[in-house]
Image (cartoon, rainbow, N blue to C red; front, side, top):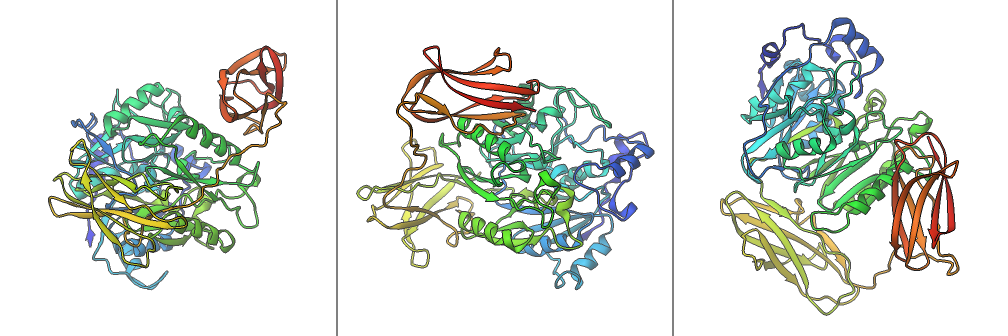
Length: 608
């Protein structure tokens, strides 16, 4: 349907100056994710009147806030019709069977005609599409859209929006239009002392209080300024406090920005797939952002865990070079397969060319069985949206459902156990309470599933359930999923596409990873330090032949101690240590391992 809802009044209410209209419709072109030279020139020539206030500018009045994760059930997918209509039509086509699609556009009739016409595929049925007339600047709705938060854990749905880090006032008020359209309150971090600048492409939540960002969030809230604005002035601790007050985030993981990603959004190189799994881009050794990504990843793994206290499971996915132009360090586009979006039982994936697409699709399908992986070409002639530093995740956002049936489970790992039953623990929560929980398992997903009623755990809180899968012989693959029903009658499963989707573990011999062949004479040595040259978080792998008390120290070219990285016991095998080169002067540095005041190993590091 077409809803001629015009949100210009919101802007008029809070602006006393002329509004800058710098959208694709004005000049017949699409602006990059970042603000380029031409867009900046137009803004400066016309003058910028930023949005001074909007939404509810105080923390939500709830005591159990929870920011939804992207893999949770969504009511609507949102897009901004501002360029690349063929890509947007493919997104709509893939999504309308899974949820409502809400389209913001400056020309509803033109948008409707394109969707129902024969351009870029067959005409679409628009019964599950809302088209809203709205002034726009750009297509990048991920960055300026609002995020679903529940005030009461799985009830009292609200939207939370931040100060947008771009001078695009029409984009900046789209969350208000969305909130009015869906009758959802919008809370905004736009007024002191809660003023916070942030962008959706640089935010990922696990749905249980943990969030990931790059240090862009620190850089744009440190009281500094750029050509168009002065940033809010907060310490990292204050930033974390605002995220907790508005979104319930209590574990805030930040990583250094990457040298070749000009927008510094983590969705360009990683994606949180569930509460325990991170998909991370991978480059050939030493290429582009590969070394810094690896150092950041090791930093996260060494300092943070999942909500269960276990290490994150890591899935690496190769980033392709731009065809004919190479990787970003040689001028190629920042092509990535992490910039995908969940749409309930589907995952919309950016694709580029067959050589790398086939591998990426295979990795996604193996990692997320049961989900339909829908590839959308982001490097096709005339549709090279990746050239503007963004892909599918960047041009979509979502609104989670009002009554989520939350199911969470830490998948079982492979095991050598062939005698004891395998215990399945799951968390199920709904605003009406849980009436029943079921476990289903099989040794082949093409065979019948065995149903087991899960029972409440010993704490009897009505949300923690357990069941057992009987012991299996060696060589068995076990597939399983969890389903639940709320007292309201709502049902759900995890993984969401079950029984097409499932978790799997293998019963049999486990081959350990990470075995090092050590020279027993050498007390300790360095593996390759990365990234080297260094400019931010830097990983220093130390390999010990046996457990020893050691000092690992960083010295400058004159031999002066710059930082004692570690002092104390190191276990045998490899330990990853870290130092931050961001504040160090450029030049050569030396890492040393000292045992009993004797230098036993050294490694040169260059700081940019």
